[in-house]
Length: 206
Image 1 (tube, helix red, strand yellow):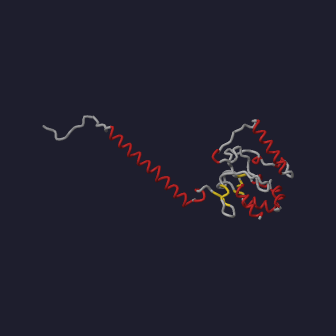
Image 2 (cartoon, one colour):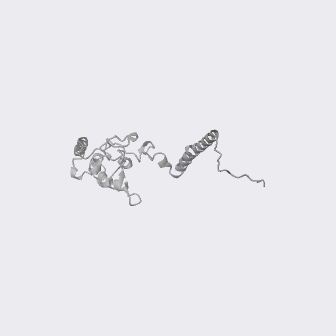
Image 3 (cartoon, one colour):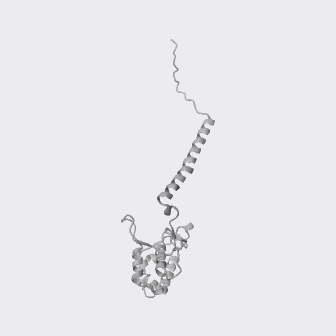
């Protein structure tokens, strides 16, 4: 009896090299469009709608509307009538985030610390070194930390009050006003953004 159906023999027909290449090219194009175009554009658009300030670099402006920096990146303030930031071994260069990772016995780090303490004595003769918070003479892990501790801000009040004529209690209230709490009330420490504080100080000093 003649069978009307074909029985498989277990042999499989393999795709030709040309078909394999064509499939690979098609998949590559699809993923390039999805991951290289649609996803970045959608993410950018969503960020601009939900958090435009953060998406554009968390830029801070002075009273005239001029951009003076970012809330995420620290900077150096040479004017002693302003609050000073932490030490930065990279000069707060955002393109060179990091530190030299000196150990506690490294002679270069020890000398830098001694220099920072000597400068503190010179700029703040009325405040003993024993009251100097450690974050004012140490480098952060990134070298870009825009924050200092509330204690590091308050200990600078006598110097700034003397140079600006602003009452100490006014400056202390300013520090308190710009003290940020722990994230979600649990993580990190209380901190003060130095650039934001100095922008507020500039307004008070007018």
